[in-house]
Length: 171
Image 1 (cartoon, rainbow, N blue to C red):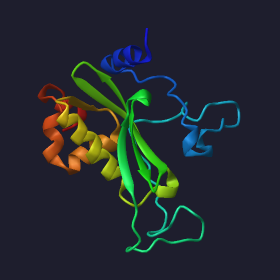
Image 2 (cartoon, rainbow, N blue to C red):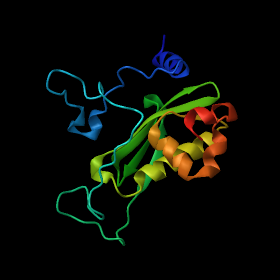
Image 3 (spheres, rainbow, N blue to C red):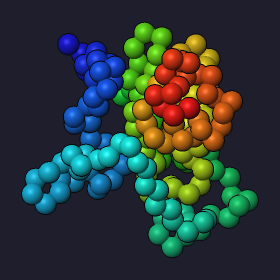
Image 4 (tube, helix red, strand yellow):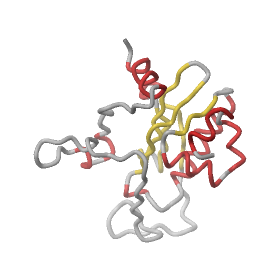
């Protein structure tokens, strides 16, 4: 059975995947914790913690980016990894992982590398992913607290969630 079929079943049954794939390209946060526990073992998907660097902090230590300095931010759908990715000046800055089945797309996890936080990349990623879902005529299931919160702040996207599921997500 494919990973997507297993995950689709897990999501429909209310259980989340027990061990999401590691994302080593986002840095050392994937190291095993003392005691051999993988980093995602104690993740609480019901809350989101945002650690924000000081405004204007550039990813490279000690450098700041001026408001006039151009940045190239590109959002793309990496279907092979089942996630939307956002790149900042060619570097992977974050992703929104999803599971797609039938005419539904379930967003299960969004992550922005700490070096890029505080610049609105998460919002840009959420908007692009939800716009893509709308263009494809997909119903959205926002299991990810970030995506769910973003939709709450942008009610014009609430219509993407099937009416029968809105109460389940508090929308």
